[in-house]
Image: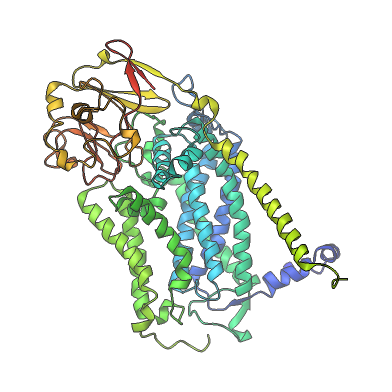
Length: 405
Length: 199
């Protein structure tokens, strides 16, 4: 198909003016990819798909959404009512909004799998450090975009979630109060906050799109890692990205869409995990809901925040838990990449994945004495995992690494 | 040609021009960040008037001031007694840690303990000093009404549902809470015997 198009006169005309043929060859049809990539390597392309879906559905939602906290005759607010109007009166509005809300959660599902893949197979190690660091930037911007977006329906969870998170910045010495005011645009979350969060919620995905471009570019310079985590040199170990991995990615997309559409059509709120029940109560600045929890994808970091009695320490630990991801490539000193040949690291990294799920569970539940201790232990392991990496090669006996694949 | 040029002069000009450009570019940030600070109408000193006699004995009313929630509590003599006897469990019994938790009229041990111009009417900003949630009012002592959501030696006060901070009935933060400070006391004065002007 592609080779036929590339032989047409029209393509030749375009190629002469853009160099399209060289780009397609170097990036697709002659771009070498390891032949042994498993299905864990599908999540990168899935993340790109979800990003496109989010931008697309978002553009259509904005045609009806109104970012205003002004009260309406119904006793609610303009923003809350406009979301309900999208749900009830706008043609296919329910579908587009559920695609967007479910898409936000699925974005994190896919990206967390992608990050887990990178950690398990050592994809962050040299020469892919910068590729990993760009990825961490993408994660932070995603979390920011999700946080800004969650305020827009102007429900109780929107309001109080934003109150809690913007108050975090108050813990920063000296500048904290001003940073809080710059974020909120007043002395408490209100109409100015809603307007600026809407603006930033539109800005961040555009930033994402640009930085994802940088991520893919960096990947195409250093090339994909592989499940064995070894450097590949021989041509017979490689296959061209197109058509082999484009078709495999397409298969992954079909499989993903099966799940995505099931959730969108049959279970869009996912039992309060994807859209929290309290968010169907209009924002009330005089009453805090009995139990505040962020959406599931932010709960691990919320637990880390809660595990400290001092506000400043909690905020610092939460920042450090994300910041430490930036230096992961430099903390890990082992010469072997893949956990397949690192028995101790393999156990540690699987425990780390379980640990993050435990952190997430603790953050989603109401605080009790037991869960607090569980959360503190999980927080300790989260940091211990990273801090043990530099000394791990001293006593870890790695298995022999294969010569090739 | 290059031999005749004074390289050090040239370098100076490069650095000076580049530096000035960087300063100018940096200065353009000022209006943009400035625009994100609270606007003039938001800042305009808004005052709230409230008649405390409308609050029944033992009752708590939440009112709004500058978009922030404010507690007005009518403390009965019994509730006032519950403020005594646990100073050792407080982070800041005398409200001295930061400016926001005190006012000029807090000049006696009594006013520092009750944190109110008239002890029976406590008026404080209702935002938990941890992360801004509104604490729940749990005035009676002990666990009888509140179960294990409060400690065993509960003297009555507030419990924040978000991260479990505790305050006593003078809104002073109890040790072990994540909140760093007592609930803030905003400026207010009595215009008449019962009419309060907040702000």
